[in-house]
Every structure is written in structure tokens, then in C-alpha cells.
Image 1 (tube, rainbow, N blue to C red):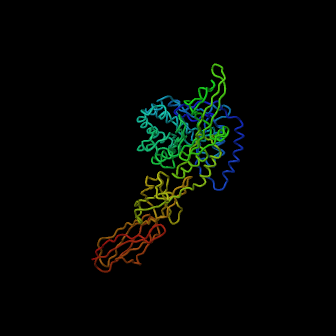
Image 2: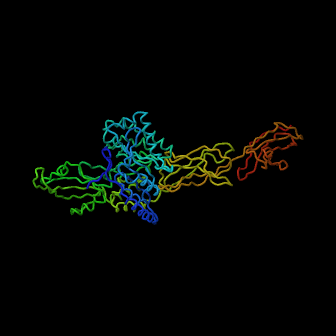
Length: 598
């Protein structure tokens, strides 16, 4: 009734003897057709589920991922551990000698999963904290992790899309007196690693225990400093389980989980946050009557560590002992109590018997559905399941039903300019803003400013990441009359954003020369040039605001033009040059120039 699980409380993952047999391959081929049918179903669910595939449980974890691919965007093979600053050790291969690592990788790639292998802390107390404290060893560790993330297949294709860090020794082994120092170095490490991975186009996921708003006074693992790493990472997976370990109680009560979510989304965009769900339950001995046989005496006692079991076995466990599970609505988990009798001999060889009262807590399909509802409530990235393959199929169905109801968020996009008309060569400040329909800013998402002239198609003139207020802004120089808009791409969490259009008018530049004084009856040459320097553009000379039709001309191929002017009466005249509107430019008239006619 026990099951291997995450290296909770900082315990190093141990190699299991379990080996994937050839039957797995046949099973997977059969599952492909099943998954295809799921994917073709009407009203497909949003992909809100991710989870871990442990090296010691691949024969259940991998088929689970394939079978539920309509729900899953990311998967994390739980296959690696840090041994030293230069070495990331492969745990999969020794545990699965019959099936090369390339086989499950090929399966995951064929399902178009984003693959983020998890790396645990396989060092002793304080070792990893010491490595990230020094510039040289921190740089070596970053290099080793990036090398894993950029692993190539035998045909040169990238194997992984990034990595997931699960460094639990900071929290559970090193001691909280080390946290103030470790937290500072942790942020330095994440800063360096994030930059290096993003430079390679790779994602950085971080898995940590829970944390809460420090003002709440709740116990949390603040060494992971969510507010400072939030802008740097792409995923935060919260281990919102293991609330009760030594004494009977819920695995991860929902109010406790929700409080952690609130602090997470205050520290980073909600779309980065994944809430942990437990595919296992715990079974505690709460009372023992009689003397237990020698072969079980060490574990059948109230001080013994709880047994663990996989969720899919919970119903059978209850029914086999005549127990009826009760759903606790406060914690959003189920529990039951049963009695089990153990017969055997004492260490002295005498017959003996004992009866243990045992209490069980676990997350059932209703519990999974309630946590999926938190994804919708807070617009989270999704759920992170420890581990895939442990679940009751009804629990996955409950997530799927909820995921079908979560529509992508609409995006309200707007655009504004600081000027509506500019002269050629003058910059204009263009600002786009992306928000949710309720007015909340969409922070940290890619967006574009696009332009289109009268004869061309829409094209990108600027791209950026939205600021805290949901805006992107740029000062741009546009070479002709333009329509402007702001856009963002659709994703699994939101629809595409597209603003209405804004118009920007552009004046031609006109340079010209005229005498400052003239003699009545004499002829004078007025010359100039337009920009852009193109030919056949009509140009008019305005005298006292009135066009002189006799002087109308067009530009030469270099944009130059000239007029002959013969003023007839003395006095002050005002001269201007104008060009008409065309598809590329608005009508342009220069400032007036005063000329004395003698």
C-alpha cells in the first residue's frame, strides 16, 4: 500500500527496481488512437493540466500523459538530479535499462507536449546553497543546466523546451536560519539561469513549497522569494500538498492552497502559476489494540510514518474494509477510518494478534474539480499533478469537465498617438494598451504596433512586452500617411487582441528660397525641393493665400521645382508653397514668407 513519491522533506530520490517492459510500447500505440478521438471531441477542454513523470513509474505515468493529452500542455520527466556544480545525473537510465530514454521522449514529442525535465537537489545538506553563493560555482551550475536544456537528439533536434527546478533541500534540510542568505543567492542564481535559458529560447519552471503573504504570519517557505523570481521565471508550480504528514489530516486543504495562490499571483502574473494537486493519499495508524506480530510491529504503531497509496486505489481500500469515505467540504478532501487486524507471532514465537485503527485522507475527483475551479477563478496557468498515473480516471474527467467551461479571456486593446499630423521625419509617440474586459492590465505579454499605408498590407513596426499598466509605447518615424493598430497573439489563455485603428497624417517637407525684396515688374526665380525627392508631384505658389494657376508646376525627378514670379504692384506680399494630398501624404502648405515689393 506504499508508493514511491517526490523527495519530500528533502530526501534524495532513490532508484527503484521497476523497469518499463516492452508491453509499454504496445500500450502507447493503442493509446494514440484513443487520444486522437478525445482531441476530436466537440468543445475541447482548455489545456490546464501538467504533471510529473517519475523515472520509477513510467509504465503508468507515460500512458496517463498520452491518454489525457487533450488536457495537458506541459509535462515534466522527473529524471535528473544535481550531483555537483558541473554534473546533472540521469536517474532514468539506471532504473529503466530495457527502454532507452529516447523512447519516452519520442512519445512525448509526438504528442506535441512542452517538455520541461525536472532537476532535483541530489547533494547533501548545505551543498547546493554553497554552490549558488559563489560566482564561479554558480556559473558552472547554470552552464550545466543550460546544457541539459539544450540537449540535441541524434538528428540534431532539441529534446527539451526548458527545465523545471525542484530544489527542496533549501526548505527541508538546510534549516530556516540559512534562508536569509540563501534567498539572496537564489535570486542571483535564477537571474543568471533565466537569462541564459531565455537566450536559447528555453523556458524556466520552478517548483517550490508553499509561501504566503508575510503579513499573514503563516508558515511559508520564503527562501524561494516569489516576488523577486516572479518576473524571471516562466512557470511557478506550487507544492500545495503535504500539509499533514506526521499526524492525520488533509493532504492540502483548499483554503491553505488558495492563500498560497493569492500570494503567488501578487508576486507574478497569474498565468505563470500552477497549483499542485496530489495523486496520492496518506494512511495513518491512530490506535493499536493488542500486541502486533514481530514482522509488522515496527510500522503498526501510532508513532510510525504514514503509509501512502495512489488515488486510484482509494475506493477499493475503503470498500475492502467496509468503510465509507466522507467528503470534507472545508478542506475539499475525503477521509475515512477503518480497522485492520494483523495475525502472526511475537519475536519469541508466540501467536499474537493486534487490531489497528487507521485514518485515511486523500484528494478525490471532487477535490480535483474544486482545485480546477481555482484555475478559472484566478486565471491561473493550471494544475500540476504529483504524479501523472496515480489518479483515479474520474478525477481527470472532473478536471476535463471544468476545463471545457473555461473560455479564453477576451483582450481589450486600444491605441493612442500624441500627434495626429506630423512632418516627414518627425517622430510620433504611439501607445498601445492591453487589458481584460474587467479593466485589469495584461502585464508581461508580447504585443505589436502595426502600420499600413494606402497601398500596402499591415506590417509590424514595433514589438515589445507590456508594462505593469498593460502598455507598450514607442516613438516612431513613419514615412507616409498610415493607419495604426495594436495587436497580440492568441494563446491557450486568451484570445487575440486587436485595437481599432488610429490615423496618422504625414506632411511632405518643402524647402524653398525666395528673394526678400523684389522690384515691381521684374521677374524673379523661386526654387525649392520636396521630400521625399520624387518627380511629378504638383506644386503651387500661393500669393497672399491665393494660388497662382499660371505658376503651377510639378517636381523634377529629384523633387526640385521652380517658379517665375513677376510682381506688378509695390507693397508687402506673402508667399507660400503647397502640394496637394495624395495617398501617401496630406496636403502640405509652408509657412508664409513676406516679401517687400518696391
